[in-house]
Length: 281
Ligand code: SAM
Image (cartoon, rainbow, N blue to C red; front, side, top):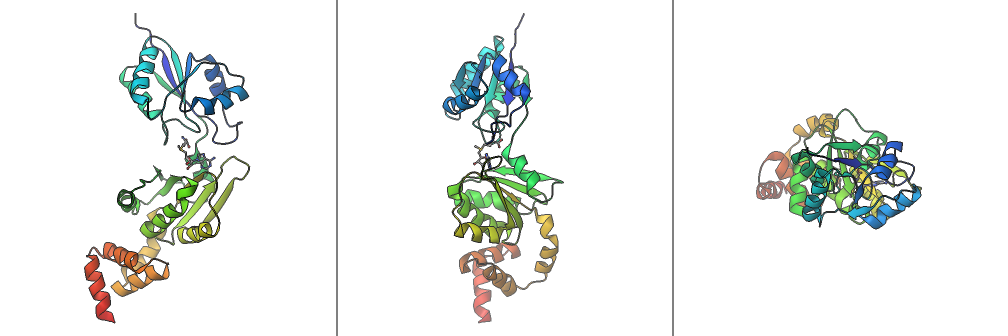
């Protein structure tokens, strides 16, 4: 007879320690082992709920060996609860890989639902909720980041991004440049914590605000989809090359970036834009 254990993917609080379910606490107590992204971090949560289950670390850098070992333990009948530092494991966090391994090995996988920064920010942003795309952290390299943003720029649904405070300004600048400074957005900060805050404004205004105010804490950026800008886009259709270029300059882009965006919109080279602008003067 084969004995199989089970993998539980357990949400943990994203700030307020009260944001955990009764069932999650029960399962954390009952499990054979807790696979935690950072055992020191999770120790605080376990102490708060008087949980004494053994822990083992499972993270991005040991997921190969540890994933194989944990899968073998579940095949032998153990119950494992996987947690990340905050929110849902597998969402911009370790856990997804372990779930894939368990599924491939025929081990049952069950969620212990709860806190998640992306959806919590989305429902408070005041932007359309009919559909949304979770982008998560953008690539750091400019070229890759631009590729992702060019792809999602035309998506009609609301977009969700994660960002660290020290990269927030750069990311807002990239979003304003690629998606348009006028797009409505919301910077959701420190959700469920003491300094929870929402800045609801256009991307350009958010950038200006955080140029003035040092970004602190954890952020989710919610950005309206392209559909919201459809009316604006219709006006843009009618615009000449020079009008487009000048509109970008008026939004605060530098000359090079304004030429690049004009070229992209018209499907022509930057050189052609440059020459057309020269011919005007
Ligand atoms: N697994 C988590 C989840 O389900 O939301 C996400 C983990 S990801 C490594 C961490 C990022 O989530 C942060 O950089 C920030 O963008 C976002 N985040 C997590 N907690 C947050 C909070 N309390 N307020 C705002 N953003 C938060």
